Image (tube, rainbow, N blue to C red):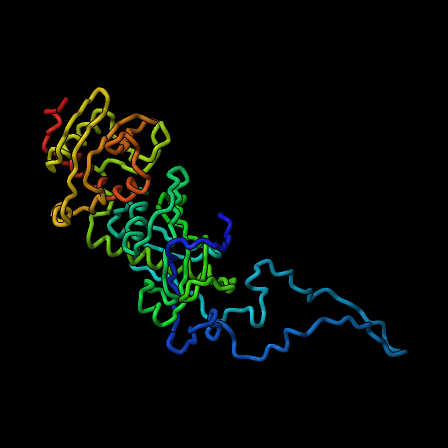
Length: 391
């Protein structure tokens, strides 16, 4: 289990993810002050919290039978969950955020401050791969305008960059600023893995939180002890909503004929795409992809595993026609270099100066590029084009 640390940041970094469901927010006084606690706190008298325990000796009247003590009703053990031990004003009386699944085969639940989402096979036995689950998280990032701060392919951890939302879960806009609505800056980690049945899943955790007023001043108010669980649950709901949208747009159900493509590190520890196909086959797939999409090839060498291209960014209509996601790659000259690492074939992208591109470029390009590679792989497989290889 990952440790939950709600951190403060003094930096003016970019925005925060927040999805806090509040009923009747128009009734909250959020203007010009700190976090409003009217909806969080019981409207009750808290005098009882000032009471202290007092020890008194039992006085037994003379001539009475000796008092017999029994242990049938022992005091309960000390509460270990700090949330359950809170009393009075420290208790957040709002009901817990419910995790609502959008699909019958997708299950979400809360585990302390974490939210977990599992993707089980559907009623026809079809399932998505761990790599598609990875892409599902990245698609959510794009829908919400969240940048990727870092990715650890070995641990399956995607760390979001700072993003900015209003308390009601809306993207923070100029209208929120004009109305003096509080600004929440947060970061999240998404850990992708599989359970003992082999079903892929995502564990969601809020890792950083800063609350600012509309002037940009950081407030002393942090998240209360209950809110990390609430926010992670809201993010889980967003992930399941995004997955449902993906089902309508992309064929993300695992095709048993698809090649395995995932983000990784090459033998130089550079961010790359890893493929389950051989070096030779990967080279042919990549070369035929460039030929099929009229991407200008300047130089190529199967011996070195290098292909240099001049890429002109495609129009959105091109990607819609092919039913895969945009590559988010700017126009320019690039080198695609293949290698072999841990029994897989790697594709690493370099710029025109021979420098590896930023990890963010590889991440943003991942989903659409993987779809395009698989399209070429299946076309070559079913049309037998592999007999006419390019050297």
